[in-house]
Length: 273
Image (cartoon, rainbow, N blue to C red; front, side, top):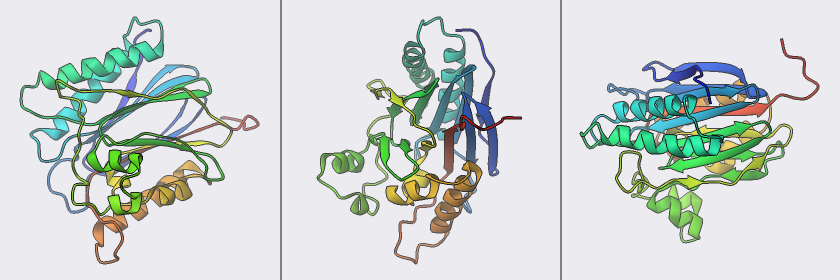
């Protein structure tokens, strides 16, 4: 797998970037939490692997731990460089090895920092998700059918998945901020999903908890399932940031850094320029 240029997003001011990659459209966004004076601890990365293949990465440095920004940046940079220069025969093998390298790189910082890391690979018309932590990925059909979602590595996320806690209740739970699995841990684990074949107009979303702690999953799906990706991204960021700024509505409100990646395959009858 030859070396390939990657794009890293880690700015303090809000940034949106658009890509035509892997046979589809990608929009990526990252921004610091409203009124936050410290750095944006999220890092977003995009790597073109081949004409119809790409790797998407999103990391959220652990809040309350030292150098969260450095941890997310180190993890994504190490991961993308490793994938781009991997000698593994498959992208699956390259990604698994590269997540391990990212973990070692963060551990080697020797400052106790850590980060989440959610990866999605796109190969032709198939995707696969890899999860460490509580940044999430999902795929929705145009009619709102949830076709894939990753399980947050957190006490509340696991409780929801097991049926012990309602998703709506979980957003208000006092332990919502706790995360049970990180890159930068000697006992890090990786959840690897099966391959999913994308149907026309399916939308893939990857997001930090700046989105998922402020919107219910059904709200996210309704906002991204139809319309241009740019418009979907604008809707998501507007609602999430509005909730962060206004806790008086009775709706979820947790100020945090916000990062989002959206992907949708090109329509077969579309003409690209």
